[in-house]
Length: 314
Ligand SMILES: [Mn+2]
Image (spheres, rainbow, N blue to C red):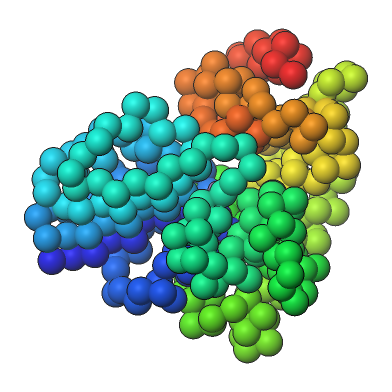
C-alpha cells in the first residue's frame, strides 16, 4: 500500500496539501514541480490499496492518467478549480471540482475541513491572486492580512521558472518547511528563513522586470517582453498579476524569451475575468483558467499570430 500526494507547486497547491496533512498526517510520496508542471499524474504508478490525493492540477490535462490510475484500483481524492474536461464518474474517484472564477483549491479544501486551517486558506487565496476571496474568508478573524498576503505571494512566486533549477526552493521542500506549523503566523515567527530569502530574490527579479520592453500597448491590453534568464522566468507570472491589479480593465501577457520562442503568461482583465484560457488553448502548449492562463512554448514564428489573437480575445 502506498500513498501519493500530487500537488501543484504553487501557493494554492502547496497550501492545499498543508491543510490536508495537518488534518490527516500521511507519509505520502510527494509529486510536484513548477507551477506549470501540471501533467503530474503521469508520474504515479498506483493500484489496489493505494491512495492518491490530487490538488490544484487540471483533470482535463491529466485525464488519461487519472483513468489509468482509477482503473488500476487506486482510490483518488481530487480537489481542483481548473477546467476538468469530461470528468467521468468512477467508483474510486472522490472529486471536489469547482471552476467558479472566484474560487481556488485551498478554499475547497478549507470548506472540506470546515475552516480548520483558515489562516492557511487565506494565505493561499492571496497567493493564487484572489485578494477579495481572501478578505471574505478572513472576515471576523483577527488575521494579520498584510503578512498573510505577502507570504502567499512569495510562495506563489517560488513556483515560477523555466525548470525546477530556476526555483529558490523545490516546491516539495517548501511544503516540508511549512507543514510543521498550524498557522502561517507560527511559520513566520518560528522558522521564517525561506520567506526572507524569497523576498530578497523577488526584489532583485522585480527591479529587472521593470526595465522590460513593451511589445504591444492598446486600450484593452498590454504585452511585455522579458529577456532569457532565470530572473525573468521566475518573475513573469507575478509581474503579470501586479500589472493586472494596477490596470484592472486591461488584459496582460508577459512573454519571456526562451530557446526558439517564448514562455507566455496571460492575465484576463480583473474587471472581467475571462478569455485567458481560450486564448492559450489556441496554441499547442497552452492551458489554464479563464482568468489566468499560459503557453509553455510559443514558437517565434507564432508571435504575430499571438499578438493578433490577444487583441481579439479581450
Ligand atoms: Mn490554483
